[in-house]
Image (tube, rainbow, N blue to C red; front, side):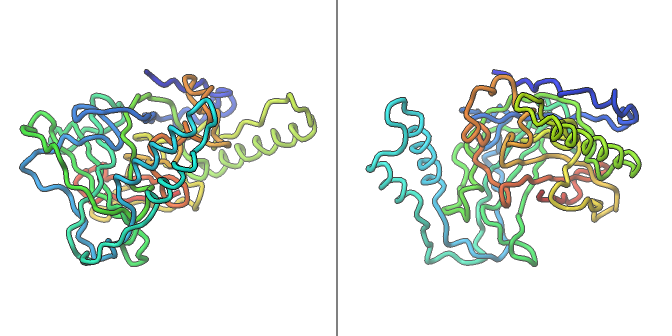
Length: 343
């Protein structure tokens, strides 16, 4: 099944023609629960990983001996989803509640050292044939594979993430690793994605307002304030909700590739390559939800009748305090170290 983004509530270039010069594209990935194969682009699916190649591990020193088992996390979600999907008496039974409580328990690995090689979790793999805005990787690589450590305990703050990006040429992979190593425990369930198939869709996007010329940004602000004042004056339950540049017209929510990063949680700050100082480009956005109350206009046609509290979080990935993770790469050399920002 495909996913189709509804037309925007209005044509922002009609109101602000100069925005045409900043128009871009981004590919919404639309992850949905499924059974992806190694030959598929996916979130949380099996990786096309060579059997003779070492699996990515986290070697940074940090606690890794306490958390929830990934298998318990997946089973907990399945039981809870099935319980609430029942037509008669939806919700967990008393027996299911006892099992859910057991699956929710953290476990301690008494022999775990802070420097033991910790297998990373395969977060996503993206084939360039499926994702229009995915750049061609180094040396004609057509596949991007994304991993992360299942603990946010890195860097000077001890709260940072550790991610690994791997570009490869898919046609060179021979024997595929069928049983990749997995961490025994994860620091949070939000690091453990549910297997999802993708229905990529390329849409138009515009930069975050704070990065536009000051005069244009001020006019956008004034236009939004005028809409809010008009809505308050009408005070009519049937009146249309105000349209906002940030939430309705510029940057779509959800998992996506390319386009522009949102800076709604912080002021924009330079994201330059630490190797060559070139301004970096947004590669991938990993979002905790596909839409929310403020971005509902982006909800695909095919999902409009689904309950928001479950359908909006298909991957079960949670970034920070239910935010989004923007991963940036150097446009001059994709092998330069990536950077990221949480919004």
